[in-house]
Length: 457
Image: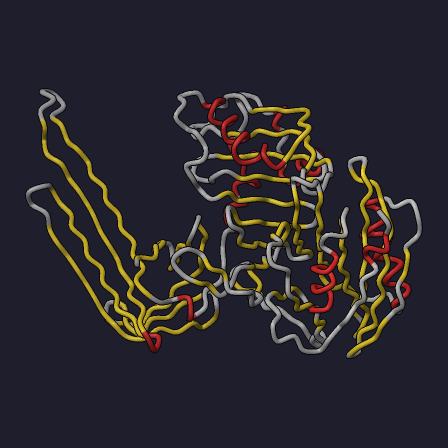
């Protein structure tokens, strides 16, 4: 395949009214039929494949970095980092004439490389302006998508960076960046990215929350019935989870290890191995972990030492008598399923409920001595003009002699920030809750204080 199939003219325009996506300083339109394959704080990728013909194309957009002072220096540095290291082309970049528009200078170049025994080509577009550098990489093994890539590049609009970009910490989180509204089952939500003070970044995906930091990627899988848990054998359930949640996206498994029994009353699962990432073609170390109510957590690292150094656990060295605190670092990961709240997210009805019972028997005769039960429900109905109605009710006592209680109020709500919600009247006085969303498959749970509320249609 000749690289001239990628000799695509670059057009950096100042206004794109039909743009559909925004990432960092770039606004652009992705061709129809392309799927998002990567989405972190530093990179977003889109791909299209034709399995019958064995062809593919991929667009990868990298977040802006500090410029090295010139377009030439930026392009050469980005070429080495984003093309030469991952794809290893055998010839120098074939350059197109540089172009300038609206304070940005842009350079494009392409070169062939071999992938899976066949010829592919990689193209880099680097733009320099306002002290920043931003790059886009296109990789393909066909000219079939040339026009679609051309249209994408012509849609790109690079904005001028803000002079003083700052974020403010709140409750271990940075004030969230506004993101494209995310449709999630029973509503659209304003924020789909959270930036944590410790460097982790969470983004909402279809089947998981992705959490990234440096070269480590974590997938907090949503609970589903995909994993067969019908077996009474713990090891079988762990293997089912690996085969269902992780294995389909990897190949060439080596050094597979499944954790044996431990003394912990909440037995942990930890399955790991070295695999080839089917998307990137890179060798990585993958671990799948679950303990108690953590849900299945998939951790992808460049290698096993990175995993061990980061989380302090080597599954192959954990014995039956291992202390429970060795899992603490892994058990912090579900806490990154946490997203900010916008006033526009609060509409409709959100409810929470609890039921519990204690059965008593006579210690001598074994006869029934009655049952003590407790149940409660709480409901918020959010209406127009930031209005709300709140209702709480409970029933408790011995069955047959239950006592009922209830309270309700209404008023208006406000958001002091995106991590708190204030109500004008809860039980006769104003009240402010710490607030956030956690994500589940197809929707979200609203947390006010320590209570989670599900959306009710």
